[in-house]
Amino acid sequence: MAYEELIHSMEMDAQLRVQEVQNQTGKFIDETKESARRQAQEIRERLLAEAEQRIDVERHQRHYRAREEAKAGLARASEEYLQRALGLAEERLGHFREGDGYPGILEGLTREALDALAEPEARLHVDPRDEPSARALVGDLPGKPVLIPDLDVTGGVVVDSADGRIRVDNTFTSRLARAGEVYRRELFDRLFGSP
Image (tube, rainbow, N blue to C red; front, side, top):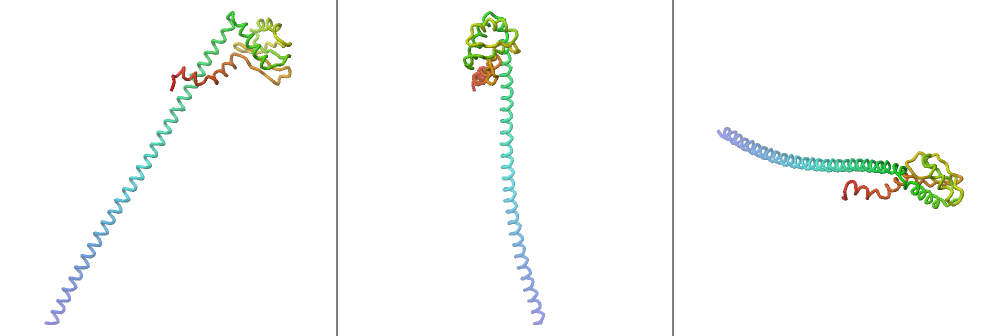
């Protein structure tokens, strides 16, 4: 009987030990699960934060690109309208030849170009339509300018040196182009309003 009690006692002790190991194992499993759950939650939150940050960066990049594309489109449209306005102005300048005041304008442009060139034997290039007015003018000009009716312009004159190395373009087209560059900001403001 003592032997049976000893075996029974050992069985009871083994059951208690098994129960204790099972409890410890269950506790370890629960702690591991909780730790894994917390780590998974931290990883999920970190990944979500990173994804939100990437989305935010992408949104800002797209917004910036869209804004830059809009600016570029506006600049292209503005430049197109400016060029149209300059084209219309050139067209209107082309009608000056028909008016009574054009010989005086041609004389002023010619004298200005000659003064800028400062060479006595200059060559005057004009449109053949301006040849009669230019011929009447040549006699009154200083030096001995040579008249060459070889341009196709809306008005004005090109003066160059005898050797052709220096050239002063005083045509309506070139003056309008220079004025367009000088007064570009003012033209934009008049066409599109001040910013």
